[in-house]
Image 1 (cartoon, rainbow, N blue to C red):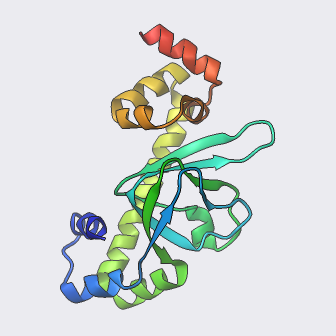
Image 2: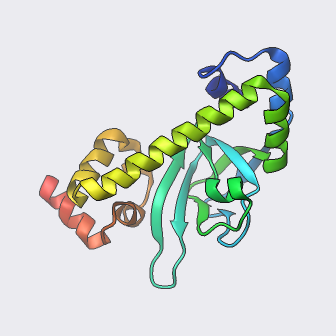
Image 3: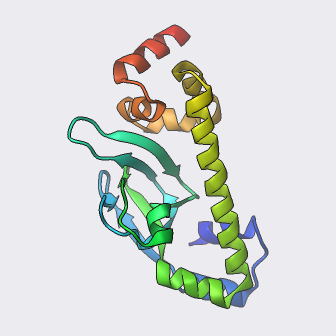
Length: 188
């Protein structure tokens, strides 16, 4: 839980009483490699902070799965639209490696928002970061070629290419695995 406190304190200085109140609402959970964290069609009830691991966001499909996001150590993850609206998720979250998270339920998060000033500030900060990341991703898909998206990904998140199967990276970039292979050969 120390990583969660460090994450928060990079944003706002917490009083010990506020931290204790916030921390008391989180619960540690462990997911094995390939476990589904959030199933399509279920309501997302937890916001999770990744202590260790990698989470993939994808749309399951009979023909092919469409991967559209990843979350890593020291970041929050969830099917955020489902979490906010409390309506069923249209996609799934999966642990790509053994993953340890600290989870807070929707109801508990509302209590933290109501009872702490820091909680409100942290919630706004997290929502703003998610919004900016989503906008950046959408612009990337509209503005850049698959090759440029791969080069950007390689320069911005080289660790992603080391720990995630290429078929998921290809899907994330919007190309087939064969297309990604061609892009990689052009660059070499």
